Length: 148
Image (cartoon, rainbow, N blue to C red; front, side, top):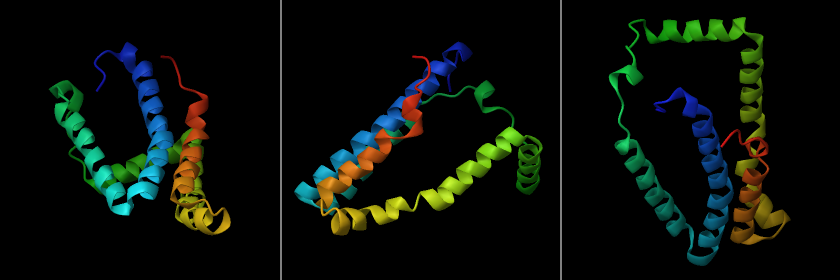
């Protein structure tokens, strides 16, 4: 979606910054809204926030060169080809394996966080928001933003 390839590092850094800022600010605001006006407003505001995403997606203009030609091969063959490629490149295989293991075993904290905030720390909804914001603050991508 970046027209000039020289702008790609800046676009990646901007995307990373926005994503990680949302991981910090979003839960903090969500915890405050949850504590002040309740869960229905949290769901409503979350749904409303998706309107901005839909507007941004609708505003994008793609050229035929960006889209590329669709592949005529069946989906299963494309998946098998991708798996063979990953298996043949150890660096990519390690990254995929680490990502899979951390997603499978490390992301369960999000399910346990509300109970931990309520029963162990006794910090309520606002504290839950700040706990989730702390997760975004400590994310690995925050340590290296790239070139801006």
